[in-house]
Image (cartoon, rainbow, N blue to C red; front, side, top):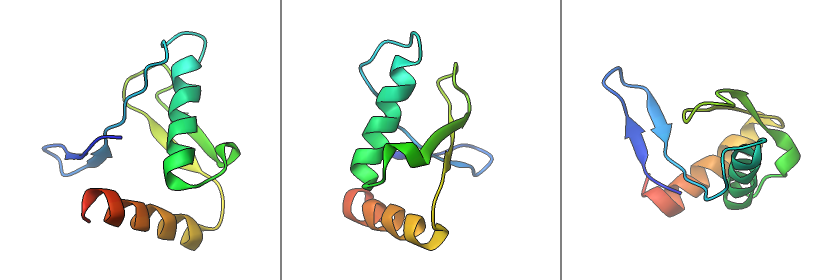
Length: 82
């Protein structure tokens, strides 16, 4: 997992990298597995909403909003100092 990046428009992104090849959805599956592991969420709750064939992705995470935000905030506090 990488850093939080802010673009000139003020949009904030999380930079993540996987070693799986970007063929037949392998890299996307590896990204979902990585994020599910570090955020302690089931893989089945994470979908790539936009950017399946692009380096930039938009995710959709299914579940209770407060619970998910709590996990993401805790992860950010523990790992990014935010």
